[in-house]
Image (cartoon, rainbow, N blue to C red):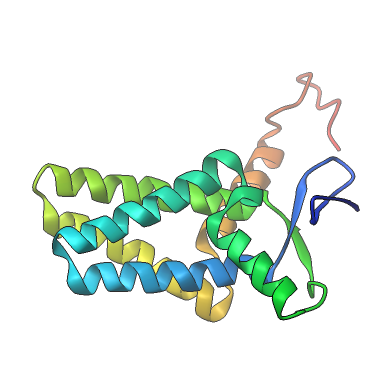
Length: 168
């Protein structure tokens, strides 16, 4: 495991993250979206747009740039929370951020076309999934990512030949 800029990387150069980070980010997301759902109107829509931006940064630039991840790392240093109990690759949580981005995008589009009830239902879905992660550690987006990986390996996608050579 290599370290650069206070971040850890696996042997393949993939970012390793503290497993506590996504739960922390989900807790903030829960607060932001719960407030949005409570106040609704322009302020609520603004909060959804803010969360959309957070999802966008995390999805496009990676979890090393995640606004909530950076807050978590700063608090971890400030309060000396010690080493992570475990690490995981950024792939599954980054995919979960992309799922949140997709649903938040749908919500904002629904608001823009006047389908506000449908938009708030979309927000409630992301809120429920964020709350589930924050409270229990169960990340539905991560599980979808891992299921997709298993299906890809099972179907032989990515094989170099049809005989199965190149499989790990």
